[in-house]
Image (cartoon, rainbow, N blue to C red; front, side, top):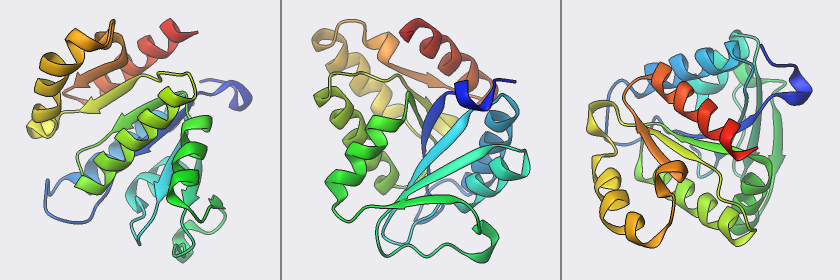
Length: 186
């Protein structure tokens, strides 16, 4: 377990809305529990009525810490009372704030909205001079198109892309890759 002040802040991009993998809520819960038990601090984006409730609930139940960066439309359900939430009006500023706080990014299979937020945040971090590592949970080949893009487009144009973007098949592998990438970044 990592001391709370030294715990890595990991932005987790997840959504349980829209078409996609019916196991999304379960994956969020498993990820939240697994990460909390390893001392990670989770930060997530909540906008347009989309809140990754299973992720937040599981993280807190396992003793973890969660922060939310939200748009003004977000009203937390009673089950999330006490969760730290920073409300920021313009989306661009929400994305920049998320990029400033997180040391690494995790993408769980979800909606196009969560994938879009991930790439917007990663781009904002690059503009600030950083390249936080990204690890995507490729369960049921959810990010196979992105994996192909990384190999075909990122590889020639981004030196060391394999240290910037990786794909995992299990939550355990996701944590192992993320831990290794964050240690290399120090």
